[in-house]
Length: 226
Image (cartoon, rainbow, N blue to C red; front, side, top):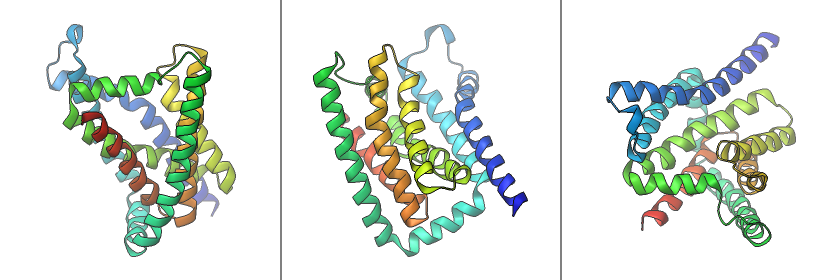
């Protein structure tokens, strides 16, 4: 059991490292697709991001292949329960997210998060690829990283949910934060991450939050396009 626990933690650490290092894979896309580094367009950035996400999804699947196959079978067998549970907790997270966004807009100079602004620009540059990247690939990557891997490290349910939500929220803020106010967006993003983690705990399959995450992102992208 001790060896299994060490292996589980080692895999989780590897996944987190791969997640944060995956941006370097975009340089491979720049080389393969012969992009001009001095004149990178927003569309080029979307292509490079999609390329790195595809590779990362494959790597994550290889790392958690047995667990993912087992959890997918559980998800498929108990689909209705997983969908109902996932929908309920996604809705709670969404309400908190919306209310906190309204409060941030009301009481700070911010009207939108820098991350959201960046995503909107990328959608405008390449809607179809962004639908694939942000609507499908990103939920797979983020749920395996911040739910599957983190659950392997933190065995206490509440510790797992809070840390998973906080790091998930921080991820969506720290890269684009231009002012201290931006860190308030940890609350809306983190609340969604918390309830994604909680739905994983309730159903014991990462495909539950993965499904709701994909629905959430895809719906926002479609609304933006339309």
